Amino acid sequence: MSRLTRSPSSSGPIPHTASDSDVSLVGHAQEHKPYVTQRTKRLREPCCEDIFLNFKEESKSMIKEMSESQNHILNDLTKDVAEIKIQNSKIQQSNQEIEKSLQFLSDQFDGMLVRVETLERERNEQLLYISSLEAKVEDMQRLLKSTTVEIRNVPCSTRNDNKLELTNIVQNTCKVLAVDFQPSDVKDVFRIRGKSGTSTLVVDFLRTKTKQELIKSAKLYNKTHPNERLNSTLIGLGGPSIPLYLSEGLTHKGRRLLYLARDFASTAKFKYCWTSNGKVFSPQNRRIAAH
Image (cartoon, rainbow, N blue to C red; front, top):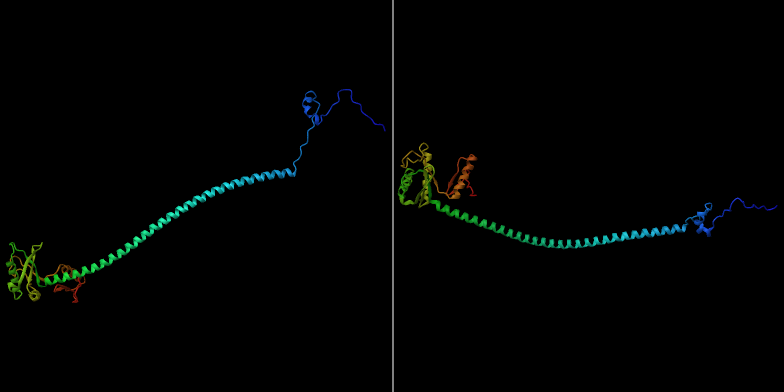
């Protein structure tokens, strides 16, 4: 079999394909030969090794960024912890100072407490001592008034009273009550004027017996003469008849106690409340304590 060859066409020039060595001339050839085409080189697909290298680089970058971030966070934490330590140290210092202050105040309070207890004990002792002194003074005043009689509700005289006129009133009173009396028995006599136009005649005898007889006779006279009790007309005083009342002299404390005793007797509906030798007694014949 014979080999056949095709002869080139005589109608035009033969087309050529540019090779790798003629790539640099393609641009110039194309300007003059538009029928010439350029052969492109196929891109190489990435292999596993390139992928691993890229992943490695990315991992390194991420780890570096994370490390830097953690270092930054650790630095901030270190600074915060240092500040907290400083603050804690200051707080401990302040607490120590507060504890010292509290201990000082506690010691001062304990001292004041001891002092207050001492003062309270001394005060109680002084109150007891004052109470005992008041009791002694009360006994002395009661002793001084053991010979004193008070004639109350006596009409006030327009004239200036003197000892003689007042002694005459006492003498007339003793005469009505049938009591043996001598002007020399009077140690002192004076008048205490009241607001209602009457007065109280205070008579201090030389003997306690005279006082007791006068009071006892006054009670007996009023009991035996219920329709004409002791009054100002019977003892020779002018003006309207005014009832007179005799009682023994009491101390200021005794007067207060008698007032309270009468008020209690009125509330409790007791019939009697009286005094004897400067002491106040209840209806049950029991002495009322001078509180």
